[in-house]
Length: 380
Image (cartoon, rainbow, N blue to C red):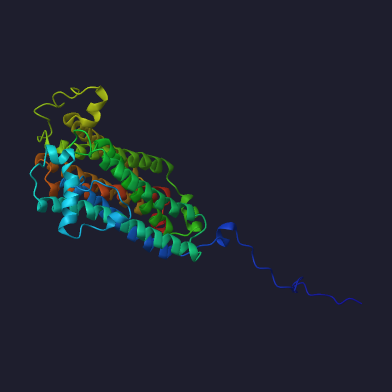
């Protein structure tokens, strides 16, 4: 005869099976903290590379090394005969013949060391990337889905080296005493692209994949879209700034807010064919840079006003910092023009561009992935 069971007795005595986790939880999380530290080192090196590159341009040192030797070029001249051999190669360039004829060996060594340092820093960046990437890869510490992203940084770095030589080679023949401005803009633009990817990956790796998905549910789509537009607009302004630097346009038309007493500089289209004016006409190039700067600032104000309505304090703060940096960067640009672009002001202006670029990316991330702290603060 079967025994009656209490209504309080559990029907099943077996232990409950452990819940099956989803694909995100079961994926390899990797050494996210270690990779972030490695990327921060890379970020600092690339930012320093941009600054050193700017100083190399401002000191007219970029054409002092006339050959591209990625490996053997790491060794500088070690005796007088080697120095004289490098100097003879430089004497064959248009820059020496048309601008620096009669330069002494010591003067040549000054510009040589700037360019050598710039290239050497590039080698250091490549070495740090390779050690970090292959170290994390071989120890299987790269999170799921991140191998291609981290490999992409290295590929862009290799491309940057080739673009750098493509830029330098434009000033070694013919009658140009500087590199082609559009090649300089390509070189600088790619540096900012690399820096942007590194910065984005640093903030993205701060959170686990599950946390990012949760934050993304609260994305402010309109603000995220506007900040994406701001990012592209700022990148265009950076390219225009490179064109200005490439032809020393900042050292002409040194009045503000007018140019030579007028809104539009004189003879903006006097070069032929017409397209050359957008790259080589100092007045038109500086005018484009000014107008884009005004437009960028106005757009920044519009986005800031939109961000003020955000329920997330972190998002509001991020866009307020962007607007403050934009105002500072505009003032630096005005001072650069008024003082004929002296190197110490011009390089601060370039550093300001780096800071603004990173702050825009940070604000865009906040708009796309509002942090849990911001959400809790909004609920209070």
